[in-house]
Image (tube, rainbow, N blue to C red; front, side, top):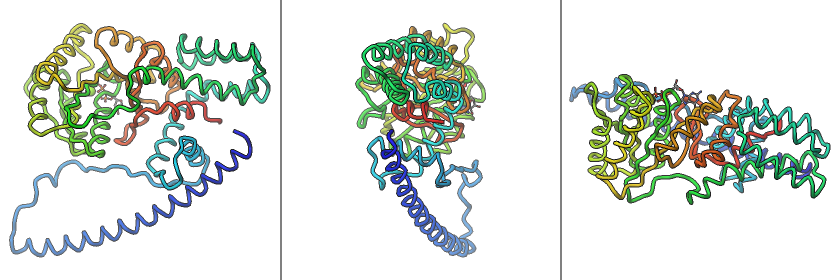
Amino acid sequence: MTNTESDNSREWAAQAYALLKKRQEEQKQELQKQEEQKQELQKQEEQKQVFIDSPREENASGPPQIIYEPELGEFDDNFTWSAMVLAAKGKKINQISIDEIDWLTKLRRGLEETRKGFVTELLDKLGDDPLTPESLDDLETLLIRADVGIDSTDKVISSLRKKLNEEVVGGEAGIKFLKKELKLIIDKPIKDSGIDILIPEKGKLNVWLLVGVNGVGKTTTLGKLAYLSSRSNYKTLIAAADTFRAAAVEQLKVWGERSNVDVISNQSKNADPAAVVFDAINSAKKRDIDLLLVDTAGRLQTKINLMDELAKIKKIIDKKVPDAIVESLLVLDASQGQNGLKQAKSFAKSANLSGAIITKLDGTSRGGVSLAVSSEVNLPIRFIGAGEGIKDLRPFNSFEFVEALLADK
Ligand SMILES: Nc1nc2c(ncn2[C@@H]2O[C@H](COP(=O)(O)OP(=O)(O)OP(=O)(O)O)[C@@H](O)[C@H]2O)c(=O)[nH]1
Ligand SMILES: [Mg+2]
């Protein structure tokens, strides 16, 4: 970015900040007004109840449904960077929201450890000097160390080498080129799939199976997806098909309550996961559901059992709703680095996957593994999670990801 471009973007960010601040003030006033009105109504209701003496609603004692609403923070480096990314994506000042700024800030923070591992070092090494064959060797080592994977690293280095043979490449231009190359790698499986952003298709039953080894974040991710989906007005239902772990159903019910989505489960011991899916499909058909989210077990006696179980679940879906749109999404914990990549490869062989969801990008230095998943397993990344909160999951966007990965400092 040139100095003038950077000045203009900062000016843009300042205007965006002022606008969001004003909007937030107005929203606060509006909320306060609504709260006052609600209290007034409640008072009137309570007075009435003295006469009617009707029992209170049952679910008043359920778990608190606290959903963290992001507030506009300081006008700092995080805000400016996030606003610049949104501007570069073509957003107008009045189109950006605090949610988006909050997410980008989280993403940038989440990738900080990965970035520290290679970008900061890379920028220090490159400085403003033109790239040399030696700096490419350094870059190669850094990319491998950041778990980007051998294939992706080879691709990037050879195209940089080719460019270097044709012209002098300055440090800044080198970073720009690197961003472009990394984005190409991540975008390839997304382009190949023909679907840019995964959303439920209206008018059909969409079934998304969340699969992956134990502890990677399947159930948490499912909870976040349920929230995202119901907030976007898709009729959503959850199938608790992890019948192996006793606490799984309870965990899902908490997420279901937070996002106002029902959970279909079978509490009996050794219930058959495919039978739970069977019930859930019946229920989904009756209720005209758009999206059925299926939680599956991560740990069974053997890996073969796990794969057999997934195959059985798929068979039931194909039989009962042949025209359903089925997505098998592999959940991967970014902090597992190369191990995660191995899992992806073995699942891809036997589980007929259609996409990946990368979790726990917050606080790991191995965020680069996302690139390896794209290039070595050829799986489109559909969502990424960067935190344990209900809002800490977003549809994957390669531009945001690469910008966050290579954000200066
Ligand atoms: N920091 C962080 N923690 C996460 C994220 N996603 C999930 N977790 C945590 O990871 C742990 C395991 O999450 P679960 O959702 O239970 O994982 P699972 O894959 O369903 O596990 P099993 O059902 O045992 O196979 C929990 O403590 C989650 O809070 C994330 O994006 N960031
Ligand atoms: Mg689980």
